[in-house]
Length: 361
Image (tube, rainbow, N blue to C red):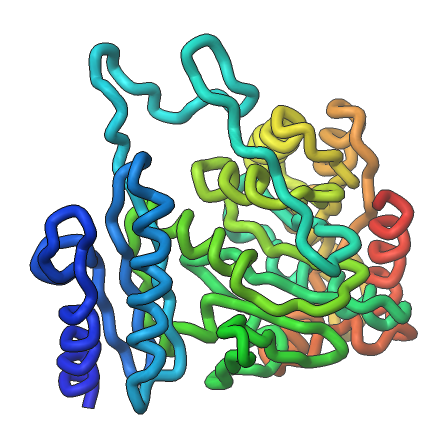
């Protein structure tokens, strides 16, 4: 079935002309990275900087043509460009965020229509429970009567479908061809995990990732939201810089674990956001102590107080501790965030975190 769909996709793209060469965008090599998996399609449209405006129309036309194919339910089409600037001097690996002599300044972050505040949940490294924190923070905010959305921007490891019990479900499109996010536990949710099959690896180059992230912001119909929580990709690379330069962030929550080896990454994360002039709402320490399920005894497996100490060094607010509790893991696997019960011990932890975030924004 997938092979037949791919043939139909290629046939549809072959009818669209490359304005520069007059050949089809397939023949000219303009279409790159075409993938067809089940009922989902992804591809990039290659351009140069001076042709970007014209090729955006080609990208939109190509996406629209593929969406019309019976059996296709999701299309991710992004515009990418290589560095075609004159090479008289060796190009920098990454332009400075603040701009500099001979370097164009970064784009001005934009407001999202109808969205009151965009809050990033970030970490300097993976494996610290950032996505679990983002999901429960979003639910806790919703429990306080706020209109909340969650954008799972972790392209390589999207986990929102599992955390919210939405595995296998897919968003729809409205009459304006905007993505309508799914909803669970009072939160509107968009994730790359809805676009790819369960277990499928997302193997994309940097420009394709950046294009997909920008499209997730621009092509989603969030409606009216008080807060949009963005589960950021871990690290401090180009994808993270793209996000902070694309949308105006009200602030960032930095997730960390107590051990010393993770705290250098906290410092990098805080410094990245500060260079981008994004307010740091604070640092939250996850896995802050194992709670024995039978005795209730706390065991500091990963140490204690590291994130609070680093927050003090960086003059950032410490937002509290989240214990290493088996109930948190169980609820995440079941798609029922602990924050859905604000009266439970863990629910109270996230309710307190939500209060501090609201106070910060």
